[in-house]
Image (cartoon, rainbow, N blue to C red; front, top):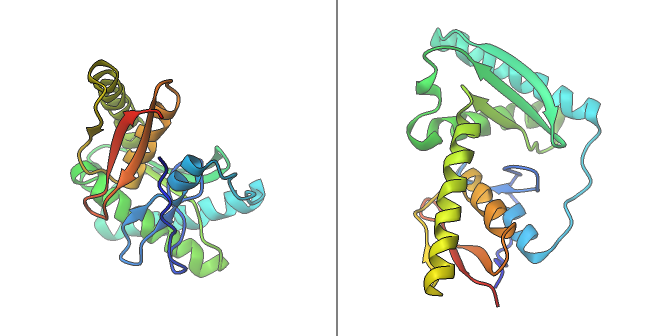
Length: 200
């Protein structure tokens, strides 16, 4: 079964390698998750120079925020996986991540808006602070594998706790790489969650 929800026209793009969307309220919503489930091909990516320019715009914006907050951090701009990336590294940056990455997601949306204001193009910018996303990705891989084991053992669907678009995308990637199971999202933000079930 696939997630056939269609993002609204006012949504922009979000998370990971496939195109995704954000609701008007600023909460992430994975249109790319739905597209991946439906077997749709991702849209053609912008050129590397354009993507790097987006990461520079976002880095300047984040640097300005760090100055206002009087936080110290090194900022790296790069292009990875066909999308602009900004990484902030430094001590005592946990407040920029927030509980379960909520503050980080909000900062990422602000940085994307800064890019949109200058370029007029929605951005798939990925912002990371202190390596949070890499660490969380590993934790979610373990959660996904545990859910798959339960589904295979009992043959019943497993509903996971509500997650952000980034978190759901990480879980979908793990589940979709395994045979005999499938995943889909249900519900609305902030209570949107993944169901892992036996494949049809």
